[in-house]
Image 1 (cartoon, rainbow, N blue to C red):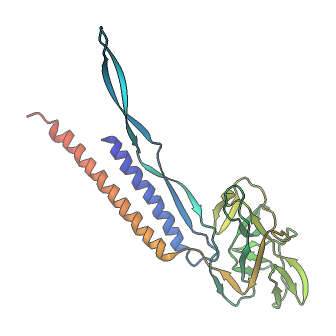
Image 2 (image 1 turned 30 degrees about the vertical axis):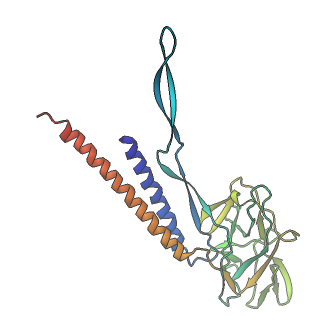
Image 3 (image 1 turned 90 degrees about the horizontal axis):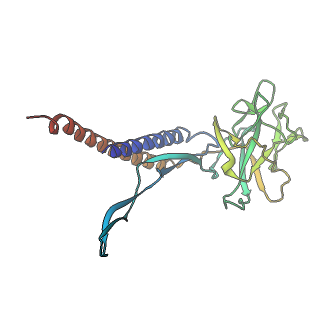
Length: 278
């Protein structure tokens, strides 16, 4: 009976984590460049059940020996193994702001080992000198006239922050920044060949799991992309699907809760009624 308690409780915990993930997706439906998560739910390791039997050997002196008849496997619960970001392109939204830049993927090769398509991101420089990556193209200028994403400087292909002076500037499709017709820098777009190596850090930022720097996509003959000034990339959250999955997770949590309550009532009877002496 206690196994059933553990199974139901594990189901409740996994659906609770799934609900939290879906709530975060819905909360970021209007966040530029946000990539939604999907939960990978797996069962605990299966237990193989067998029936223990005894048989007599047809000999002059009967001998009894044990045998096993396989019954099947038994799962003892489920858990959320990991949250997997969905690296699909979001819709482009026109803003008219010259500092807003949308990254549009045109041709990105797939990883030879996994078959999963690669991913392109902007490179940004953190205060501690580390490089992080983002798809949030809602850029602004800080008090030092540096192009920033969420307050973090956007890096050029030279590895330095991009400084823009004046209100008249142009960003070409390949990311070159032109001020007064003169090219000053180029926005660095990095290429992640294996998306499994990308880890969410919050605030729209990604890092690599092995802390290795992603290579630049500028000049890569196998990668084609374009930047659109005055646009941002919307999130790839499917609102209708997210609400549907939220309701499914809630119902699953409720079902496991009722199973847990039923086990609790059965244990209460076993302790307080069946075991009572008349």
